[in-house]
Image (cartoon, rainbow over all chains, first blue to last red; front, side, top):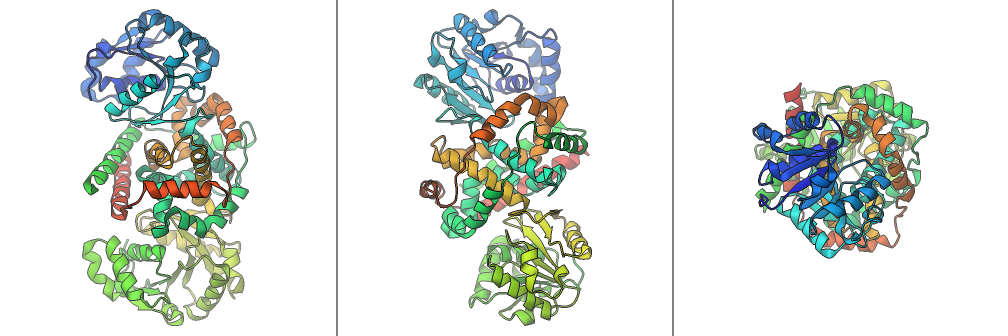
Length: 308
Length: 308
């Protein structure tokens, strides 16, 4: 769905996530003049132009120069209907930011934070109206990956939750309401849980970094791209589903859980694994990644619609 | 690569994995007469015909009736160059099976077990020559997913390891040598580590089974289908890679690890999660799954080859 001329989005922060969100918003906004990016960096215009050009379709290129760029927060949020923040992961920065945004933005503007870990209930502490702020956590890169974890604070109003979910649903994205403010939300916790075991296995020389990645790319990756873990294991269990599977292999599963790695941040594994990763992946082709991921989504969507 | 007429494969066990392996071997064997399936079930012919027909390309259909089917193990392995076992996950069954196979199979035949958890060093205990057995652990469904975890026992000979890796590499699959006989091997440990956290989050009502699956399908699934966790996080870290990412978010990662779920098999979560999963996925479309996964692999391979 295209947005009406009344939708005006202000993005705070022109880092990787901010730029990717700009690419995403450009695809639905009525005009690029409805998009504002605010960042205090002196090279803002150059960064926006260079980085956006790399990720948007060629025909959108001429729109970049029409985006409003500013270093002035007050000015940037004055007419916004949505303020979406992707600034530093710093509690005090975010607390004072939202107090300031609240003073200058229109009364009904939605306030979204892209934080990966600081809950809205901490970020909203200096706000007059704590019901306005909600976490909208995108998954990198958000212009490709449709997931948005929507995490309200206990104070967030139902109307803010509803409007946020509706906004993204109407634009073909996948907003999922997270019902409790757990640390790291859901996608992060799942990814980090798997990474911990991955680090353990490489650290124990069971496989290398590159072998572990190949294992994932040729097994769970494609499987979970089509169906998440519960659906996949349910299917794998045959007619008896997940329950039958667990009856069958529960003993092995528990043995793996009991034997699981318990590495921690800052321990000895880091240099070994950082080194192997750097050596394995000297060049990273972001364009290839984006093309591949777009095609994965298209393939899954087409096959699902073909069945229904 | 097509196999020469000298390659003769005997599959032990006509369960889901055995049938899927039959579909895979049919695509490279010189003729269906080079394939033998042995199973004691009385309805073997019906099962093989019905199940294979569902998963092989239509033009291979006429080959099914030419596969050798038998209930007689001695007869089945007599001329095999490869014996691949996908029988029950039962140590005593496997130990006596391999002792018997060894007596009747040709001297140079490779012995492969599809076990998800019983290491070759336990299965080989009753064999005269323990150097012959190796784990070749496929990922379900193996006729689609290319991963094969190759896990030697300490006694397994280098020539058996090399021949096994070469066989699968030559047929376009992805055999990965696992260097230690860890419980659950690598793919399983990673999947179960993630499932444990997934179960915890649903059990705590943070999200439902269906929501958690949608999170995976719209974030890590497609990402890991293209690039495993190390490469993905390395890319996500920008120019500084994985190390920079960990410097940035290591605190949040550790907080998630410290807060991670510690559910166990047989605890109260089971009924809740089995119920939600059954309700969410009443009908499972295996054909859709297989089509979607094939297209995911094609898409990734094409985009990678386009860049190189």
